[in-house]
Image (cartoon, rainbow, N blue to C red; front, side, top):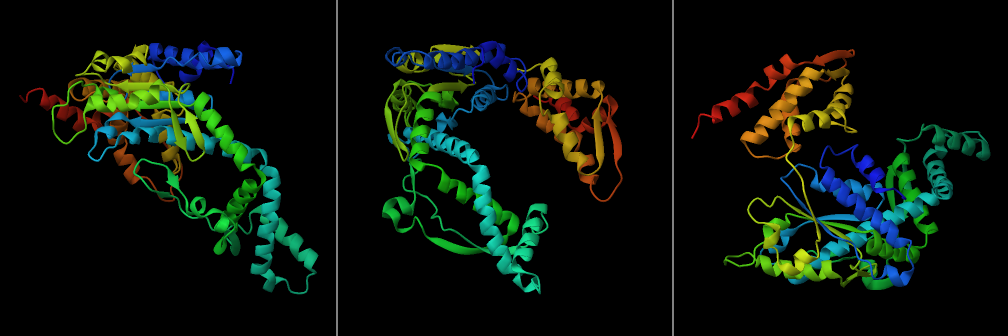
Length: 435
């Protein structure tokens, strides 16, 4: 997608409030990828991504910015926790798992795209299989009808959804479940070990026409696409478009090992370093070079500082941005301006039970005030605090809703918020007097 940095930020603004510095940094990084792709190959090989470190408390949008960025351009994306590499039983090669996961993500993306291209052809082939199975299930109802007439009736019923719940017996592929041989390592299926023995094995399953149509369409689409081409494209996408988000990197920002069961934090940094610097990781889809993958690291950095990372790793993250704690004004915008905001989500959820939920501006402001106050006086968990507040606020409505009732209009105002969040705000007020 050919978007300018300003356009990228504009797209991110629909989902993330504030944090302009971070959004600007990732937008430039993404645009630089496009710029690099337009250059001759000999120059392109010399230009590596400028990796980014995001500093800021939890819940302010670090992960969401990276995730939305990847979704925007359909780039392979994985998130890993740096702290998992400090666990007991850790081995250095585990860090390569993040690249294997990235290759897996790229493969699924490419396969979905290719299957979408042949979906119409696959649907026709799947329909023939379902009609044969449906004929067998319904042949007792044929009576004196000519075979062609009966088949035409079945086809019409299939298209209209009349037979969606009808149980049929369908021959489907028997795919062995993948086995993970080493924790954090590549998953290997039985078929990949014993060759073609299991590749064409099938089994009969009893399932509904609706489910059968989906399975048959997926199988027919798989037959129509070139598996080798998908794997090659997946490796290319992982190498050139992949984004790896390393969270909680501040938790390994220590240069000394103080003993105990945990692996040296500096040792973990040194194991991550080759991946970020550029190396080749073997995956089941082929070797993946990490030289041009964009790495985004994030952490709260309350205790440790970026400067506590080993110099070699610092040097591989030249761009550093700081995300700020959310204010009342930010919470108001999150509740009113973002796409699929929490107020919108709860409105849709309760709409299922015939409740037309509406929030006036006074209620929105009070919710924002409560969220900011709790974050200030307790743990600052950013926008996630709104989930807690909204659950408490709508607990009674959610519990009492349900049943065959007519549509009810329900207006949430400031007074309602005060009454139903009294437990939350009361507990916070009491804590002010507890030493």
